[in-house]
Length: 333
Image (cartoon, rainbow, N blue to C red; front, side):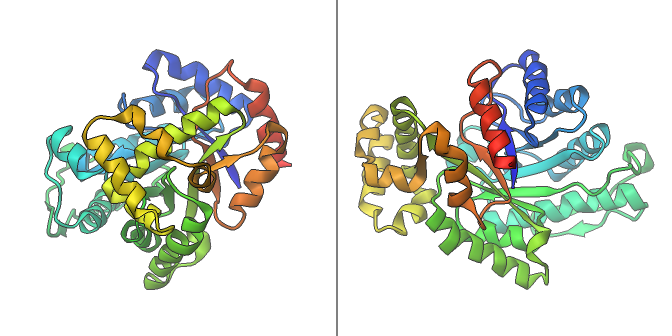
């Protein structure tokens, strides 16, 4: 199991020391996110200032971008990093696509993301082989690639694409078309085992692919203190309030709780939500263990479910360095 780190939402000036420290400690990859900053720019700095560390977006919002812009960014980052870049895409939810990015929400999110992936790869194939660009779909008609706009072939054209999701449609799509699947932090081992992994496997069968052709990348809530438990409780309350994530709660028969959380969120009553997350709910979605036992507990919790593991807590050099060093050593031992 690869053990990765997540980059905190920091300005670009702070990325380089974080990347160097992550590589020195022994993390396998450093993931950037699209929250307060663009997720691609930090990858340039990570590539420039490390030699071994992989980097990738977890995630870049796909529906906020055209396939062309995604293809160009990934092509350049793959070459510059000497094959260490991973393109991670996510759909986000309708409200953010329409009201934060000002873009249309598709009738079929799975269908549009499938076509985006095909389009990105059509660009890459055209650039690498010289084949004409020719993709004609429901959402995109891409037929023009003149030499002036063609970056040409690169040494590292096999760029992994990971997609993120909560529900079965995107998990199946990952199995059919992708090299990886980013599991949303709002999950439980039971949800992975009973819902997500079977959907990925169904997608693999449809495409006549093998399990080893895809990596399941899990971001996990963990808590080793009361303060961390309180933080996890608040984040779980936030995620559980999202209507498109209610399928996770439905597996446990907690639909009423999800609706109550959604009602509070609609009224902006964020402070009242964490108290609704009982210890029973918290323990399903967050691994609670002493620091000394955390590595063994993580290995037991995700054995057979995860190929890559990242903690929800971002990596910040100088904070908990001994904790991170011990965890990496024990997970790799």
